[in-house]
Image (cartoon, rainbow, N blue to C red; front, side, top):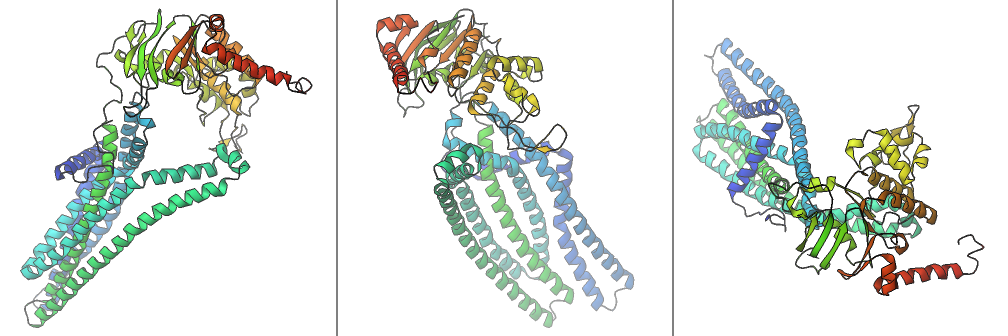
Length: 629
């Protein structure tokens, strides 16, 4: 993990220079995403800042001209035309800038999202995806990638625009009354300070409510997805989950309401202060005009200048607060995209040879962190080329962890894993995984077509209908897919709309659990030319006939190939060349099925327990008559 603070997200005491660097990064992203749009947007925004000041002075000159008999009609017409031109310019630039802003936000959102998920795809292992703190940060980074840079750019440009407007109006106001200039400017400082404080609180709230909002989403998904619908209704837990969801929503609402109350009180106080200053200024201006110190035009520009300064200072405060909040959110994005690799990747990786000798686990120790207990304790064994090795043991013995280490989702805490003598930590992880095929117990069911679900196993064969069908036939799922409405092009999901063969609306098809497992196995079979196949409970959840068919297909597939098999059903591993028995993170036995039974150790005990369970099932009254034997 990087050294960025986790609690509360970004460091709110960071120096101004840090925010300046982040603002520069956001502006650079925007400029790179759409250079022409960005340039025109900047020019129009800055030009728009001077237009209200120009309108105020033209109004003053026109009013003074109307009250001065010596002013010619041509001059008055010219001033009126100038005012009309400024009005047209304000209308055109406002709408044009809104269009350019929307275009820029879409372009920068696309670029930042691309960079974010390029960084996420670059994470070698699983540690960050198993970290709740990182998942919260990633969620905020996704929000920031969509809106953060655009908000920063809008905030910076808004500041520049407001600064131009404030400068022009302050200069105009100073000409009329230096004392009123200082008073109006001083009244705007509390608004700026208050907005900064509130923006920090809003950014903090985003982080603090992260776990609460994720729980609320979790409960809402349980209440609205087909995967959970059966159990939720059977167990009658819908109202219970709904109460929990609403409790989290109330917690979030209460926190936001508290901040909204503070915001409303502060804004009301600031608005009252602004009204008092503005009202006092108008009284002074009227009195000064009555005494002959100010003309009618002076009163007009004075009123416009006071309103303009107050409005621009309020806008400055809003832009500073919005920019500050966006930058704090943008820090989550920068933290993700700038994180170093989660696992060390050597600059000059060793070429990974074609597997000829085998894979060796040499005194492998592993734990997920220093606060966690040891999962593996000095594990050593060899998987020889062309052999099938089975890992067996009780839950928690370390079998799945060994698979994670073999795929290099994690690195051993101690010891090494060698591929033909080459340490896996010295090779390119992508090259390693390209040499492997796998079928996991927690397989993925993609909301895609049947062909795409299989084709994801090997993108080189993604559009190869022959190879996809061959993998499906070997996994025993072809006959089912051939009966679907659009056969292999049928969408295996009801989440997205689809069309029937005649072009009409249709719904996708949902497979059973066992059918999905066969599909996942077909995905693994598509990688049949790989050096090593990892099979983690590939037949769990299947009925007896389907399991027998799959085991036969796996035996045929493993013949002459190097494979690692994990299964709780010891009958399915008895034909493995080597069986490694794990207990409490240690290898307690290894050998072939016959040798381990003869040894009378842990494997023999587990095998006898399972066999006794089957015999007890056979002796149950009525089993034979029911056709279950």
